[in-house]
Amino acid sequence: MVSTSSTTEAVTRAEVCAAAIADAFRDDGEIFASPMGLLPMLGVRLAKLTSNPDLVISDGESLFLAGVPPLFAKGDVVEGWIPFRRVFDVVAWGKRHVMMGATQATGTATRTSRPSATSTARSGSCSAPAGHPGTP
Image (tube, rainbow, N blue to C red):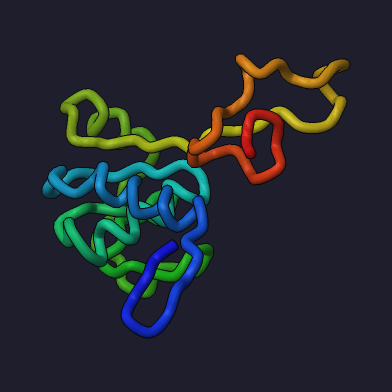
């Protein structure tokens, strides 16, 4: 719960995770951020808007973006072009910070039994939805 002088608001796990991801990029400076997944994408964009304006973000395909578009929107200001083959040059020189979102095995397509407690996300993690095994 976040308490202010006049209101009390519940903070969701997703909000805490987005802020934590943004903190992970705080001191990176001018580096290519590669978020993979919804929460990493949200956290990287939050970092660019708040603590690290020098962060370089892309549209996930081939363009570097100057601004910070809303999630799933096209970037309106293009800063540069990076074809996929050039991403490997960036990786080789260590100027890239990757953050990947966790995935959860659901359904019975690949599993015949319920996942064990050791293979699921623990309470307090940023990836397990509420009510999922291993969460309160």
